[in-house]
Amino acid sequence: MAENERFLTAGDLAGDDAVVPFAVEALDARGRGVQLGPMLNQILDRHAYPEPVSRLLAEMIVLTVLLGTSLKFEGKFIVQTQTDGPVDLLVVDFSTPASVRAYARYDEEALAEAVASGATSSEDLLGKGTLALTVDQGVYTQRYQGIVELNGEDIEAVAETYFRQSEQIPTTVKLAVAKIARRGEKGFVESWRAGGLIAQFLPESPERMRMPDLPGGDLPEGVEEYDDGDEFDDAWLEVRALVDTVDASELTDPEVGVERLLFRLFHERGVRVFPTDRVIDDCSCSRERIGSVLSSFTAEEIEESVEDGVIKVTCEFCGTHYEFDPDDFRED
Image 1 (spheres, rainbow, N blue to C red):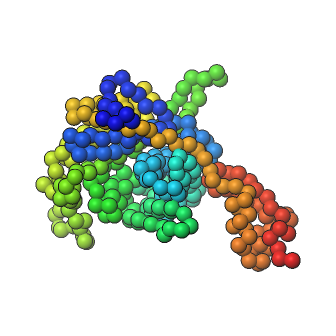
Image 2 (cartoon, helix red, strand yellow; image 1 turned 120 degrees about the horizontal axis):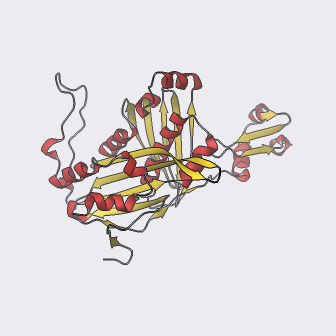
């Protein structure tokens, strides 16, 4: 065993905001788990969205962190939804190696109607549209983008569909969000927590991980859903069955922790963990970056941007306000 690897014991605990890569070699499975605490709370508190919107954005942040920290390159990994639901836009931006920023856009009236009718699940709030996952390794490389349809499924199911379509890798995903109250100096204080687990079937033989093709159209009459059946290896079926036992509270409970949860799930098979990848609330906006964008504006666009004699810009991600003198961008 390498120095940076270890097998889990029952006493191991994970900290918040640290992604834990793991492997269950007996089942040819690998994955990542995370519990987000202070980092997530900072992002959601800053935006002060209505609770249903915060919960939805938190799920997307967890998914992005799980996927983004697995990519070994310098650049960005962006997950974005565009839909016709009350929450029509979610953007989570992960910049290697650890920086996370996120924001949501929603229709206040449509959201209020959804809340009043109890339609606050992720599939209700998103509606129909697309989920795009973009890999950007910088100016000298071509962007890669995978797109999957959002059509009445929750974020977990959509992520699994993405891997099935784009990567041909059997994948199972669990996401959970919670708001917890802790006693502080001035009484109880609420804070956001979220957790997630992704497991993938990665045997040495490609044939063992072959997945059945997605249906090309409507399901046959009388068939409610396609059954993966014998197309999957017994090892993968066992991994899925174990992950399906995970309760949402286990993913968010700080007393459980990622590594303890992994031990509970896979101790009979032996689970190995690797060095954690910490993540932080960190926006990449700056006066210089925004000034560079404004420099590319036409004279007409500059004039249209002037308000009370200055150009005002507010970062959608972190809320930082910038003001610029329009004369700096006007041609002499």
